[in-house]
Image (cartoon, rainbow, N blue to C red; front, side):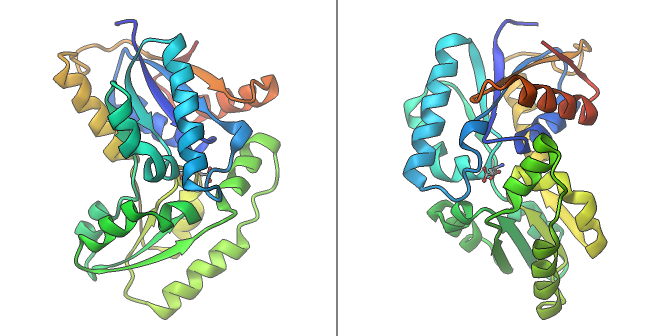
Length: 262
Ligand code: DGL
């Protein structure tokens, strides 16, 4: 195992769903999971503010740790900051984007629904991506969903997403040929089961990220398949709150097997 870390970055718990998928794909790696929980949610902030927060936090982490890959496990941060950060930081950066390309490939009707934060769906990056595809895309901004999910896991609040579910029902009623829902925010991967009631394909970008990380490791000569030792994860929070850290740790251990918490 080399001493360099792979950094996973999100505003909150959402990125743990992305990290968990990557932990299933690689072995013997050291990870840092950083959540900017002090500033969560990102989804209703301005592009400039998100870029400033993400850059500041990442530079701080780069000062303290040797990082070999940065993963923006946050669609909102990717939409607002990845292009600039790739020009400014000399470490490979993997971003996550709403998985509309794989969803469209699998869709029979070529009509899909994307759920994401207000910021993600308002960015040029998203417009370009959606315009590059043939097929129809409905997009729905979910201003409160990420924070409801965050509060559910961290503050034990009941997860009441009736409003969001009825919004989705309405769209599916209006457009009955929609056959895929794309989860364009990593927090939403935690409600996949609830959305399975719609009985249509639910797609997120986590597997795409895991494969990209694996291929970057392979390219750098690491044999991630032969090495069968467990992955290690260090969790850092911008709040530095000890209780919150326990909740994050507990959640990661619940959803991942191939991991030791440092
Ligand atoms: N998990 C994030 C995303 O993928 C951010 C949610 C938020 O902070 O609003 O977009």
